[in-house]
Image (cartoon, rainbow, N blue to C red; front, side, top):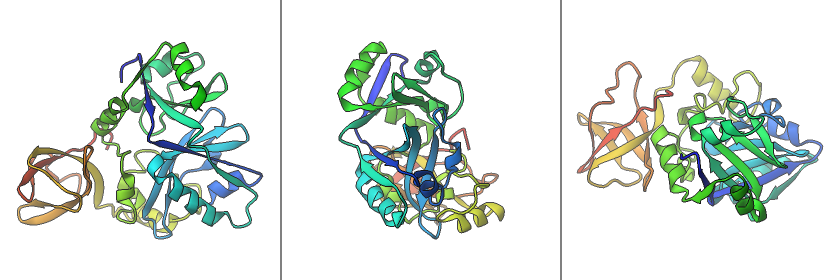
Length: 294
């Protein structure tokens, strides 16, 4: 991203969770350790099925006495419902603030230039009273400002930035191999660990129990991760979600997210898989991309 750009991510939604039991509530269900989340540290996390399959991903940010949950807006209502199912007798409230707060993406360089910033994944500072954080997944994704919708354009101006199309940010995310669009297509189709959540700092293997922890830990301990979510680039033709990826007459993967930023689940072992090859999907040809952080 350009250092002078601010991409308003209109497709991100914000939940707010607070109350006496908010910290324990989140600690018992999400994949990361909520104890890491402070006024100066945010984290990436996921909510899984009891079997360890992917349901939702989000960034957790400390705000006042509670926590912002920054997730894909198209999934925010379903996430709200899922969290509410786990609420039971917990003394918490869950609010959908997606019509009041917005997320803006800033460049890594802009974040480093801000007073009080640190070059650490997830490091969080306040711009006036609003959190700005270096993305906890990969610093090349830059920073995020979570701010009231009424203040966003004035804040962008005061930061000496220009609002640009969110495609600039999502093109960067795709080039880095990090899926952020249409993640509902992954639900119940992959284990969370197969979504590269370990490498993207979404899983804490020392925190103890959470929903889906048993199978996640088993895959990790037995080193049985045989497939991953990876970006694909079309060389020729067109592809559709659900299409099989063929190599030498054998299926090695399946397209899960199509459209502009396609991702597929790929069966491979890192020491044998040839990422220089071209693969077939019906009459189309594709390349499978291995991100440099894997």
